[in-house]
Length: 337
Image 1 (cartoon, one colour):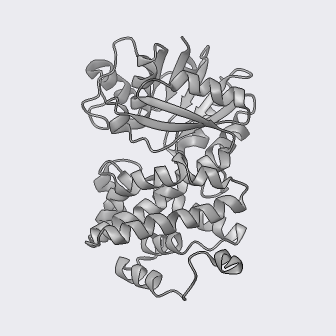
Image 2 (cartoon, one colour):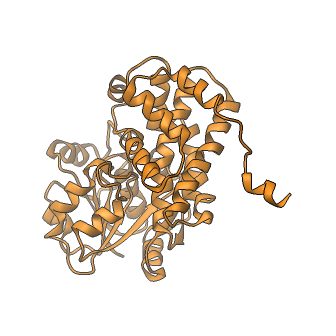
Image 3 (tube, helix red, strand yellow):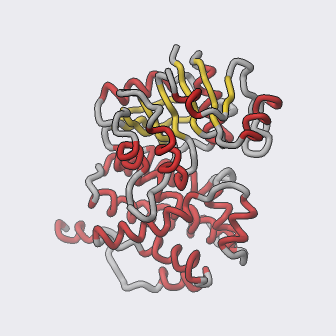
């Protein structure tokens, strides 16, 4: 049994608390919001973000960060990506040398273009940092529906430690050393999911969504490979797997926000309607920054940015994508034909 604290009591943090509690670990859930902790204590359920998923009576709740961090074998950082740096800064003086931190959020920091594990390592250099990601909607994980994820770390020992903590008969965990590939896949698929939602909002069909998924993973893959990631990661759970579920699922907040925008809402109106952080909006600008830095063309993500931040009509963005210059699907194939 391990002592584990979930730092962040949103839907994903709550769902993972259920997984870890079911695995027999001693679990504490922390939130910066006293009223949220009080609600979890009284209701044993996150009534707004994860209704219907019960929290065991032995799961502890606290708004005291020192209490949540001190003496824990593993800290699961589950705050939205835009709060990762500030939360890590607040944790830094409390984290012991060699203490494990697993990031489970998905995003790229807009100003620095850093991944979330890079941020954590910068702010908490004494910690051992890993990442857990994959096609894993909280609504399904909380209900115990079969799910698979990938634990990424710099050493096999660290990745297998995370694997052993989380894995059970309905939550299968693989391991990988490709942390950059895992994080880029998890962050950038949210931007493509916004595009898929916009297409749904316009009333387009399965052909359109299949095109966005396949050309989307091409864009993500080109950038990831330029940044040192491995092809296998992008063809796996945290690449194409996460992209499929986020573009197609009714649970996807990014797809829902995109759908509302496709139906005529502004970005601000759509995010208010979703009632949760839409990570793809924050990752969209960072993706363009990375595209420019590594000189990798990302036309879908570029058009999503134009819609979100330049008030470009979604139909115009689609038309521009459809009428780009003629190309081979894979130019390299012609060189060996």
